[in-house]
Image (cartoon, rainbow, N blue to C red):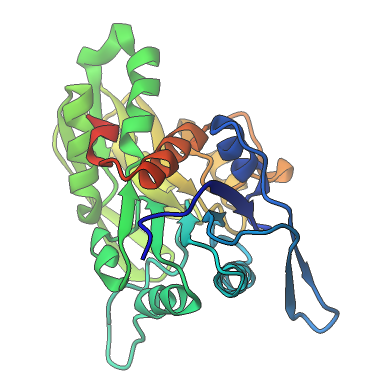
Length: 319
């Protein structure tokens, strides 16, 4: 079996075509010619309009809202490439939906992240390239190789530049205990102390902040998380950092901006000065507000794709 295809071809479904185009541009390629449409009854139709025989195919598709449609688009595209004799198929999933359903929290719960991982492999993907899985162990749910990029190395330089003259007065904050390793990585690169928001969650998307662990009094703080969904936990944490901890200013950043429901309105009214997101999920015009800044992930995905094609190590990306 060949190690990789004879050439690189980048294709996109409907979730993030602009990101796919930027990735292709960074590689000096044109996007592959394909069409993903929907029949009147909701069935998804895929047409691949160029030969992929023997090619190293990369399908770019974030499984963001509407999550189930975008997952089906990805699965059907992978199946189409497999049946068209592609040399190797890589599912490039900047944001992997269902990642928060990674364990049984109570009796009779499904582990949906494992199910989706199985579907992607069964459809015919030979490997997966993704960024900041909600739980890193999800890599083990796949029966194919997974290259897991991190968002922190892209976020830290933004703050190093903007806080250059005030770094001694900055604390990096984890919004909960689950993000401590990510925050520690960020803090080591930024050379700053950390603090933790002790958060109790009564039900999904609802949390109650209880305490601040660490010293943030009189400090500018940077909240670091992997994703922002409704924004409730983030805004509550910002309030607690100021009201309980005595912080003077709250900034926030995350890899994935899910921003469901009225998240943008909540963030706009919050005490967060600025929210920095990576563009793994497209930000619609109606959700663009002055407080939200987006950073481009295309260059790092393009480099990862090139390294996959050339069989080069990925570990050197974030030295």
